[in-house]
Length: 116
Image (cartoon, rainbow, N blue to C red; front, side, top):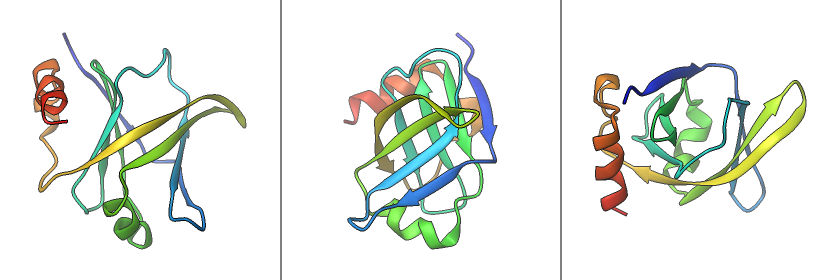
């Protein structure tokens, strides 16, 4: 199975008074399936939207990085134009290094699931 990888370079991360984060991205085809986010504290995060679809959140703003490192989950909202298509809560896993894009396979997703 091939993993489709997309780069999301236009998105918003919002933080409320309680420190919870919401990530607004463009809507994609199909729903999410066992989503999770990997984040290493640097410029990028990986949203595993499903076993065959990964979205690279390109350039996490420095002012958001600390908050991102200290949360357990985020609310992801998918938008088409300005309409909400779907929303779902996604657990965040902190890692020391993000995997290389070529390693984003079903086997990698299985390893992530077994670590939960």
